[in-house]
Amino acid sequence: MKSGCFKLIAMLIAGVAVILGFTACEATTPAARAQQNPAAFESIPAKDRELVLKSTIAEGMSKDAVVIAWGKPDRVTTGSLNGKMVETWIYTSMRPIYRPYYGLGVGIGGYGYRHHGIYPGASFGMGPDYVPVTSSVVRFRNNHVIAWETADVR
Image (cartoon, rainbow, N blue to C red):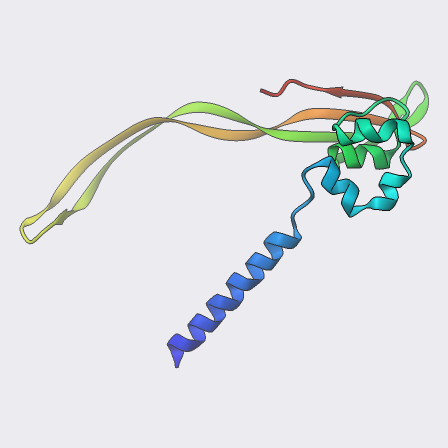
């Protein structure tokens, strides 16, 4: 009885995790984002649609065009530029930072019937840690791009 309940609960948890995993995914290409929101894509002027589908933005584009081209921003800030209000969208990516790691230790264990004891161990390697870096910034005034920049985050 207990084993059956445990299996049922484990299956329910796994099912919920799978469903959340699929529903939480954001479209990763401009074409997929355009398909998800056809009204927004149709609202983009014809001259900009080809650029948007190539992940390119330009001054004068709407917020809808930027969302389809680059996706939703990771952060949004507001402020003033030359005395006028601007909204800034910040996109980030993860950059690997490689640094050495070391490990020393002693373990108790063994194998077989007669081979038990204390065994020393050591490890050394280079492992990446990932840190967020700003990869792109877009500034809007009156819901249109007034400036943008991208960084080389390699």
